[in-house]
Image (tube, rainbow, N blue to C red):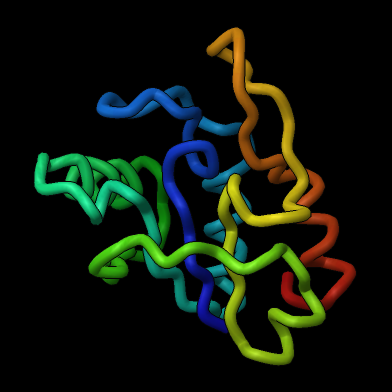
Amino acid sequence: MTIYLDFDGTVVEHHYPAIGADNPHAIRVIRALQARGHSVILNTYRADLNDGSLEESLAYLNDPERKLLPITEHTPLKIHPGPFDLNEAKRFNKLFLDDIAENIPLIPNRVLDHGLMVDWVSVELELQQFGLL
């Protein structure tokens, strides 16, 4: 399956142009998706800008400490995500993991005192239930 992975609010807290605090469990679940053979493509608004922030997000993801398979592909511009619906994801062989995807589980930011980010624990459980992890 092709996984379109957002960055801000998904992998890290929103803190653009800086890179926000780690979103707990994000890297672990992304690593598990890669281990199952899913293709991960970065799909971020940072691609819409010409300010170096896309490259910073790729460098963050590809830091050897994170132990991810290299994520080298990205959308040329942000694709607006479809809803978080695993039935549809299986049907079309693509999934958007994005904090703005309708119905994706969210939790409050942990460092910032406002905002929401993807709840990777809930996402992981749903992916397991659908046999994607």
